[in-house]
Length: 285
Image (cartoon, rainbow, N blue to C red; front, side):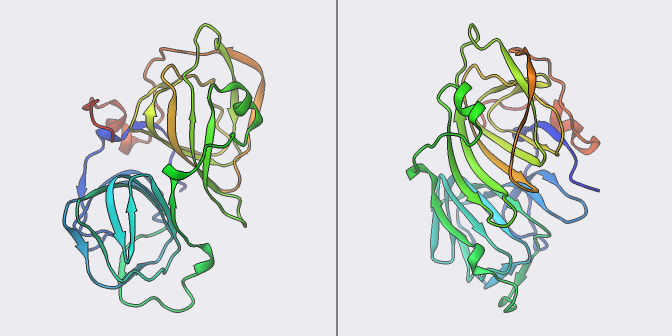
C-alpha cells in the first residue's frame, strides 16, 4: 500500500502528539502530515520545547531531511536556525542533539525512524550523500526549472536545496505571484510522473479543489491531473519530488482559474477530520 493521496490538509488542524522512546525524538511533539504504512516513511512537523536534549550517541536507520521553520536546533556541533536545511543519510553518527530556545522543524523520514542508541554500524553511513547545512536565507533566487512556470508566473523564483545525482529527486523552495486576476483568467492543467509534495509557508493557492492557506500540505502521487493554479496573494512553499525528477505534461488548452473554489479536498479516511476541522488561522502550522 503506497502513501495515500492527501490534497490537502491544513497542518494547524493536526494535533501535536508527544513523542516517546519509540520515536526518533523522544520528549518532542509532532504532527504527522502523511505516512507510508509499508515503509514507515513520513512527513512531520516536529516541535522541540525549550531545553530539549538528547545527550546519548545515536543514529537513525533511514535518511532524514529537515527545514527549520522557527528557533534553533543543534545536531552535534552544528547549529541550525530559521531557514536552514539539511539532508542526513541513514546511519549518520549523532553524538547528541539539543535545542536551548526551542524549535519547529519540517521533517521528512525516508523509512522507519526509530532512534538507535550507540555507534553506527560501519557500512550503513554514506557520507557522500550528506548535505550538512544550507542557509536558504543567504541563497539567491534563481529561475524555476520549468520554462512555462518561469515565463507565466509573476515574480517566480526557485532555490534548489537538493538534487539526488542518481534518482533525480529534488527539494526546493518556490515563490511566485501575486497574480492579476484581470489578466490571469485561464491556465493549463498539469500532470507529473512522480510524487509532488508541498508545504505552503506563506501566501495562498487557488485550485479547483480548494483554497490553500499558510500551513497547508499535500502529497500528490504520480499521474494526477491538477490545476489550473492561481494566487491572489503570492505563494512561498517548500517543495519535494519523489521517484525521479519532476517534469510536467501541460494541457494543450486552458481552463478558467477558480479564484474562490469550494472546499473539496482529497484525503484518506484517517485524515478526513483534518480536512474539515476549523482551526486557528493565526497559527502558521
